[in-house]
Image: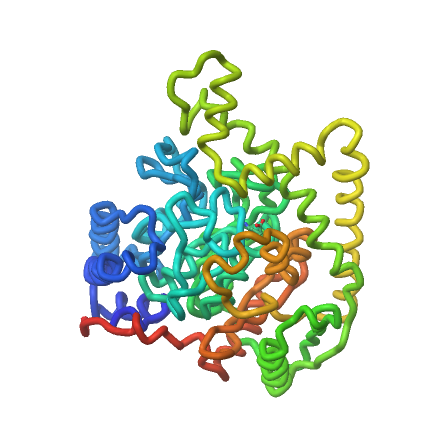
Length: 490
Ligand code: GLN
């Protein structure tokens, strides 16, 4: 039952010689073949490539050159560029796009000897909260196939929740690692802006996008973050800040740590039953020795409106490169250059992406720039200042990740504003650039609920420490949806 193992356990098994990387990889490839048609979480499966990497990892191990994570399979969200393997970004626009280089995150996984199982489904250009905006069709939530897995990293979340990969990457611009992690019972880490290189990540909103891991446990997130984090000369926004070995502080006592509970996170926007599980989790942290303090983040309510000016503005600029000339989709038989641009973009982009481009172009246009974009940037500062003030009194902040459990497929598709509100508790963290860790914290009506811990700049270590300690006294992260908890003994 290899799928029950965390990556820490797989790593132990590999180093004990209980199984080889080729065996583990083949086991996952078989599960992908068996279960992916129901879930639709993979866009591309990389069988041959994965087995070759696994064989190379086994050879390294035989020579005594393996690191802990060598030979562990991972799946990549399909917006991390992969050399010679399609990178679609969930869009018809890039359905034919093969990158000539690897994203830095992919390169670092390769350098550590990890095995890439495939590329994961996602909302087109990472715009969405339900994974229903993909050119490749919606992803299903393994806990209830009539529901969404969250988005935009919905393929990543469904794949790890159903154990079609032991871990995956995602990206989080306004919540897209944490919200799907919460809706599928996973641990998801959005690092500090600048902690993980964005080189080779197809850009959505450049001042907000950040890549990170979706895993079963905080311990696994620590293992993955340790290898993918760090300065990258190819990304001028990546920070020259040393990367600690995040595994070494997981077992520190959390006694005396102060956890702030923002009152703005517990209003009637929050499903009361979801709220109950968060309160139970707060008690667990108290039992572990943490002090709990009520705090206020008064500008929380401004985060969603500010985000929906800034993110579309940046997206409209980033997506101008898809013009049918350089790469990606090109319309057939264009009459002239203008017709080429117009029809390529009209045919290549989906509805939500077009909506964002229109909003963004409007917000940046002469005469409106000051009223919208500039104003939004000013309010963004106020939102960050709320956090800075709070962190004078507390070490971390705890709240729900999403206001509800997973909603039904189709439920919010015709109501963009209600879809946007799924990220009510996550978006302000991106606007402030802070790290945040989503942790499974219970179930409501058999659907997973997640809490999130928000940390100071570059203090992922404290979040992972708290997360790991919480996971020593709970077993939510060990739950696997019944339909997917089967497989041969290895
Ligand atoms: N759901 C948000 C949006 O649609 C956030 C997406 C993300 O984090 N990539 O923009």
